[in-house]
Amino acid sequence: MNDPRIQCFVDGQWCDHAAWLVRGLHYGDGLFETMRADHNGPLGWKWHWDRLTVGCKALNLPLPQQDDLRAELTAIARMGSGQPSSILKLIMTREMNERGYAIPVNSRAIRIIYRYPLKGSPEERLPTPIRVIPCKTRCSVNTSLAGIKHLGRLEQVMAASEYRQAQADEGLMLDDDGNLISATSMNIFLYTGSQLLTPLLDHSGVKGTMRARLIQVARQIGVETIERSIRISECYDAHEILLTNAVRGVWRVRAIGARPCAMKDEARVQQIYDGIRDHAHEFPCTSSK
Image (tube, rainbow, N blue to C red):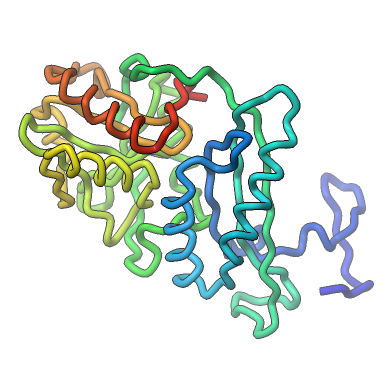
């Protein structure tokens, strides 16, 4: 929308409006992927690409050529001098060549990539177990958007503020029916001693890339993994509770609020963790922030 009559002011100061005319900013129209990277490029690329493919199809966003996108991300990952690892955030959105919710016929796809330094050091162990709280903010139900990582994250923003105020490490989110969906930025697994359970994300939540990897590796090492509706009360009977995220890796939960978790099958959890690490050729980051 290259219209000289349009004016844009940021914090009271006039600016070039073209940089701000993207539909992701105005309507949340778009997707994002946050991934670990080293000088060889984004880690866990297969899972990120698979989810991006599904998301672009759901939002009718043109999908970049895979080899070109990976090369671009790798070149950006290599820009950090003296930093072998980094975090890359890819945003896929559209230019705003006309106002209104409807997607313009000739709207051009836009890629925005951020590079952040990686905090913390990768180590060959699970991070220190964390404390979580149940959040009052609920996950909305939308079957057409469930599973994809779209830009509309306001629910997670509000829930994250809750656990920060409670001085917890993460927050658990439910839907309006009381079903457990995820943590604010991590997927959740319950190990029962014989099965690994994780919420069925067919109506809400994000299907994380580390979640996909954990399911695959767990099944490879003979752990029955089931996706189904889960009530938060089941957490208190679980042998172990695991949270997963592509940047943070795999975390164990030691308490929900003031109530301790069982944490009585560390050897099995370590076996699952080692399988993920060996399979992906990468270590999860131990830093939570």
